Image 1: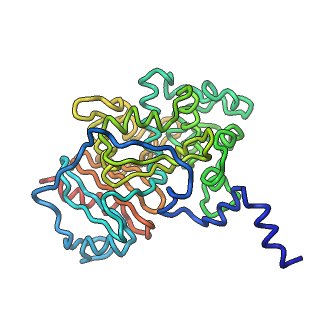
Image 2: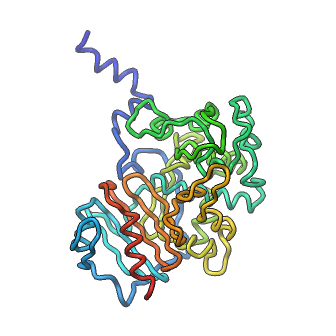
Length: 367
């Protein structure tokens, strides 16, 4: 009997979340090739950053966690695949590693949460959503039966919804694995339950962002979330290369709005530039200015914290902030220094990336 056990396990789990978790084991930089997706088309009028006349020397030595290390060598040994530093539309530093290049597609992981937040702001401006203060059951009435009537969109944005969700990336039976590898995100959202009252505790989890995605899916009435992103942001800001957003299944799939945008370092940087410019792109207001400002400034109401706001991480009282994904994907924005930094990698490598980016941007503030 024992010798047949592997075959039985293969049969039982061949089409389920646990089996896919076992096969793929853990999120990695090639995950955009594993899942079905919807295409994002490059703009016919792509925006391009230009090369600075005074770039940063890749042999620059810096003193941080590894004193005296050359910047480029440090990035290479910490499993970085792309590092891009831009100021005033000029590329100060651009290096790729491990065979990656400017055209290489890299999954965003949770950087996508910040894109989802931007789309919520656009949907409010378009009158599809009344307000961030609306209860989520206004758009997802099936959650009335789940005791979630008091949860608002703002609670979801601030990660203070009180909704039960296990964010563990190592548990094949946890919610994160189910949302990441599962094939029915709309159903999973409809089954969510409260753990605590909303506005009581800050707890980061991807379930909040996926509910935001299902709300978008519902109010768009036939248009996909990917199509809305294409229309509202991707085309207007001149994304340079074709990209994609992973979905849960091929037929009538739902975008994994808590993760799984797939694009290049340059196009991630353009999203950072959009927020650096308060949602304005060369004279056109793409994301409402008030939404960008609300999204990147701490609000301690409803259980909010000083380090997080509307799916963005707040870095300091000086106004800098970033989007972040597992494996150390970063889009860092520093308005005071007018700097955008993108770091993409195969692993976070226990590096203080936020501290490094703040240090690099701070060194340019007086220039």
